[in-house]
Image (cartoon, rainbow, N blue to C red; front, side):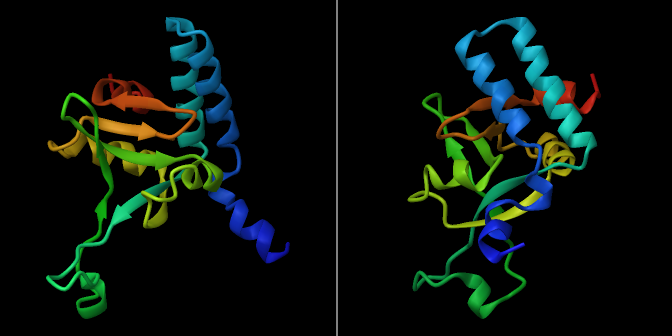
Length: 153
C-alpha cells in the first residue's frame, strides 16, 4: 500500500462509510425508523472495534506555545463545539474527508475507539454528548442516545 492510500484510510476507519450513509438517509427523511437504523449502524461499528477521528485542543502556555513542547505530560483536551443553546459537545469524524471539511477549525487529531469515546462522554458533566461529522453528515448523540448505542438502557 502506498503512503497516500495509507494516510487516507486507516484500518479503524474502514466501514465508517456505513455510518455516513445511515446519517445521510436520516437527514433526507427524519424518522424514528431511520434514527433506530443509524444507532444500530453505530452499535455495529462499535462492536467491530471501529474508530473515529477526534479533534483535540492542546493547552497553550502564556506565550501561545503548546504546553506539550515544554511539558510532554500536559493533558490534551477533546475539542468541543458550543451550540446556539450554549451547550458543549465533543466532535468526532468518521473519515479524514469529513475532518477536512472544517480544516480551519481542527488543529490536532487522533484516532479513538468508538466505545471508549462513548463511555468517556457519559462521565464528563461539561458536555451534552458527541457530534459526529459536524460539517456535513452530522448526527448529534446526546447521552441518552449514546446509552442506547452502548446497549446500556
